[in-house]
Image 1 (tube, rainbow, N blue to C red):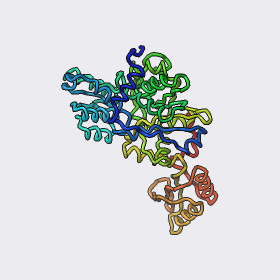
Image 2 (cartoon, helix red, strand yellow):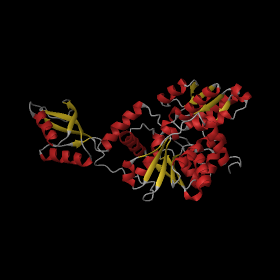
Image 3 (cartoon, rainbow, N blue to C red):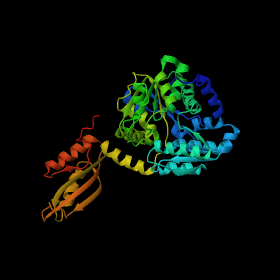
Length: 418
């Protein structure tokens, strides 16, 4: 499917004028830490600081502003895992349109409550975004509400493309744009606008989660491919298949696509939080994840723009990411050993740990395991360490002092190559 002739740079520029005073001009921020790691100049377009916490307001408002008075009177319905829901809800409040949003039953509670706070009605249908979309379309047929697509509409794509206009105005000599991909609306709009402005001098690279890579496979094959399952923490891009219109634009304008694992996404979220003091959700972190993992390799000194698409991260998810991230980065070591269940033996073990420069965060005893002798007690320790090498030094020292040490859930001794 080729894109219609009216979907061009002019439409994106018209969307930019329509969004004036509605959306923020988000920063294009650098990071010396990332620059030093990759040897290039990486600039992050911080749409996590956009109104509603993601880029979605751009496309939603542009589509809703195009409704006729009669369509506005009928109200709208949409489907979303969360970010598009908030964009539609806020846009409807600004335009005085009644909104009904269908979300998956297991959608982030943070996103559900935020959507409701903007004034939309909420219905929870199905397990995935695609289930919710089918439910929303059925509601549209039954009630007469106008269905507002999350990505498969020219006005939505044009609205998202305004990000490229801003990035190239903020930094005209960008040579690559790295963009998260779910249904494809974001990268379609950005690629259309960037190629119209900069031509072949700029490369467009899409990033998907490995557990939901239908857009990548569709882009490679030329036809829409649907994922049988969706399995990723990046719920904002957890879509079983790209839209037909975004796919046509991707096929025409996108230069490359890659995938990243949830572990790599988690690491990127941790880097954003610790190094840049930014809260970024899984979908928003895939671009940095791809760069850190070496899936996207900028040329030395090259200026690369990375779209950070959203920051609506559930606090409970963030807590799990932080816990796992500390372990993976060698900052936290979980280990177990067995000592004599008598006074002085625990203090001796902890003294050895202290001598290694590790900090004890938690100590647990277990006396009732059948494998233990009557005079033995199992001890589990959670230690704060400097890095992976420091963890190895701790284990080596304890072993040399006669302790049989088991590392629990350690990433230090496992191979996680993809």
